[in-house]
Image (cartoon, rainbow, N blue to C red; front, side):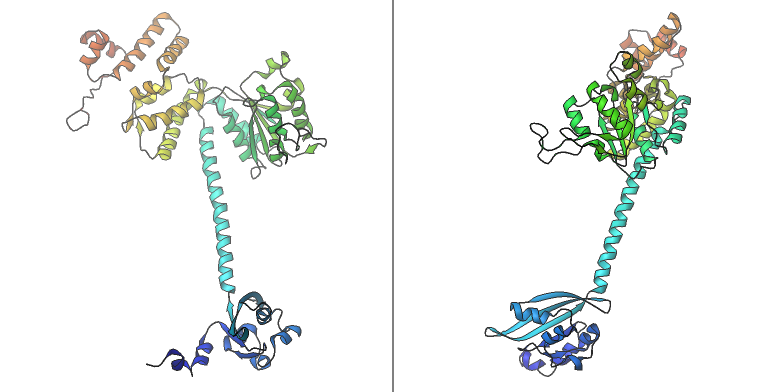
Length: 472
């Protein structure tokens, strides 16, 4: 069988002419001695005008803007250049073929990458758009979750929600007042998300979580070398980071008096002086503040600046505690049950008795406590259905809180005792499987227990486990 060179000796030009890529060959003097049809097409020239001419001359005459052949002869190695011809983008590679130490031939390959580059650009554009959609979807999910929290059957809360919808698009300062856990940060973020600054930063700082010196440097930033241990590059403060957006000052009642003067300037003029700085900085921010304290009392006691209070308190929003909006508890239970089922991959349900038990609790920690308890119930409860016994176990002070609520709501001694007996029987009933078991645990006869259950319209449901692990 003949060797490969012998086989293809007469056909190499046919192979080159069949190539989709442009192929050019230059000799040892840099003269173009071969150009296939694809190269003519890509360079938009007549090869008869090119053949026999030196690449350096074509470059000098301006026929070529750049010449890979010239570069190869200069470097004695493989070279690649990028060129634009007739609206097409070409990648041109020149490979030297040596005879001894001298270049004998230069093999040049021209590839049209216009479509490939466009596909890459389109892909990048699509990825960028997908990232934009992803962020928007995350924002929508977050917004939907927060708007669910804002849905309320309470008249007091509905008034607040109506107020928020009116003030959100404005630039007015807002002071959110309420106990810890009522959702002040959720409402602050809701205002930002429904304002004209929604696409700009929302920056939160907890004024009660930092020492005075650290709070000042975090809020206003500092210049390099401002104090011992300071970064030599300085630091941008949160007020500057919030430029064009919203600055949320949580627990504003905890801010030291010394810093209140500096904050007043920021609120009034949108200007501040970084720690160790000599030049003021100006920002464009909207300020929302929140507190669980009575700022008016603090003003009277000289613990809070009066002028700062009035600057912050342009529109006050007072959020009632959960115990004063109990009609919302049922919706919150369903909201958090779904949220934590989705988060942890469960499909837990909750019994009506457990819902009633959660409703009767006084919720000193407000919505935050309810959210935490619901997550605990979803994760810890071994059964598929959360019942009253799980609720009592999940809330350590459930009984104490329940008793306190009964005493507060009862008008007379007899009513209080009657309500207490009702709650007591419900709690003990959830931990027993039979009437007999419950009567023995309480030290009552079965007839007495049955009479008391009938009095409170409580029906005992037997939950004895059968041989298959179910309940009968």
